[in-house]
Image 1 (cartoon, rainbow, N blue to C red):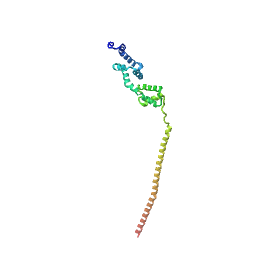
Image 2: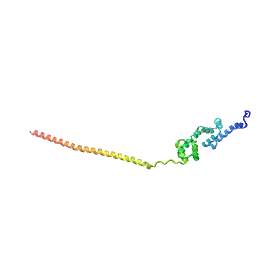
Image 3: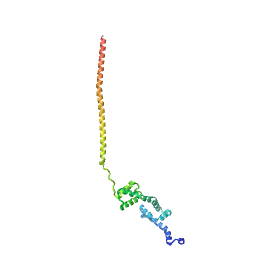
Image 4: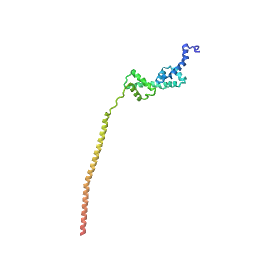
Amino acid sequence: MLSKAGFRAAETETVLSFEEKALASQKELVGKKMQAPVDAYRFLEKLALEQTAYLLAESSNSGALSKIRAYLHKWRPTRNGLPQVANELEALGMARGAKFDQIVEQVFAMQLTGRGKTPEEREKILRKLSGIKEPPKKKEKEKKPAKGGAKMHAAAAAASDHKHAVARAGAKHSAKAKAAPSRTASRAAAAKAHASHSGGSKKKYHR
């Protein structure tokens, strides 16, 4: 029929064997060698687009369909984000080269399993793979003067408060000391006046 339609023998063979090749690819896709997401990604990346489309439309194999959908909707977008990973590795101080590219690919493989989603997590992974250590933290000795300064400030404030309290107490005591003679003199004058008044009264009575 195809030959009568004008197809050449090679073209007829391609059409007739298309389904068989697509099913063979599906079998390989769900095999043991494709258990790691990165291996399935590399396989689907090289698979003919028409075979991918055929399996997506006609296959009833859930395992194959799951990987094809993950490849289209998750893995390829993640792959497109690799330049950002490369920039982060370069920012840590690693020069671009063969090892640099290898580390970026390792991070990509980890991302396909759900790791390295945040910049903080990726930095830890990149440092571990590249051997670049974190910058040393400031020593505690450098922080101690600040703590000592705070203690000295608190001690000075306490001494100032004590000084003011002593001054207030001294002023209060001085005021009391000054007020005491005045009260004594007032009492003496009052007693003298009373005595004088009593004496005058007695003389008038005797008269």
